[in-house]
Length: 62
Length: 190
Image 1 (cartoon, chains in turn green, brown):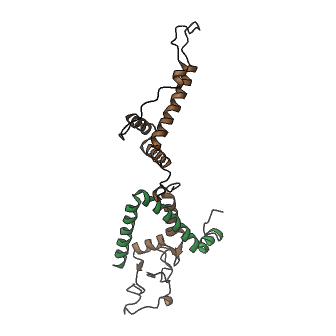
Image 2: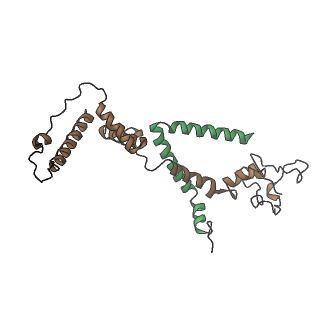
């Protein structure tokens, strides 16, 4: 039940964002909010990302 | 007003260029002489009589024709972009948020965010995509910290998840350590 509520809330949120993104100003707002989210995600998870890059998180053949 | 002046300037410039080209390519007879060729009044060509200024705010049919030709040539989206650019140029004082440039596409930060959020960054030992797979396959549950496997705890008493021995499973490597790790997700040890 809890999962369904979360999925519903997320769907509503995504629909809201799509609606905002249809306007000219909204598109700009969404665009920079997405970049802000990327920056926050990288800053708050910098250790994990550094581990992925440094400790063979991405494994190549050989 | 500014747009009208710009349009007039552009038309004057185009007329000047056309006149220069025509003057350079004056028709020449086969024998090389140009006696019978119509004389071109270069002065007239270089300085055409200006068109009368439109008195009302009705859309200029010539401009509409140019816009249509531009749309046919460049495609609707590009023509719309150019028109928007021209309008923004003509109305520099408009500093609304809609005029802030958004370089690239909105898809780029979106895909980057989804890649980081769902695949690269792990929580409780799995990426969010991994947790989604565990939940969809019934090997983990959201919002419960109790062990949901009926055969491992038939008395239905709360289980100290830290004491659950995780049996090695040959079914799926994702299931092997899917016990609660503080992420709010509860896995079922096989």
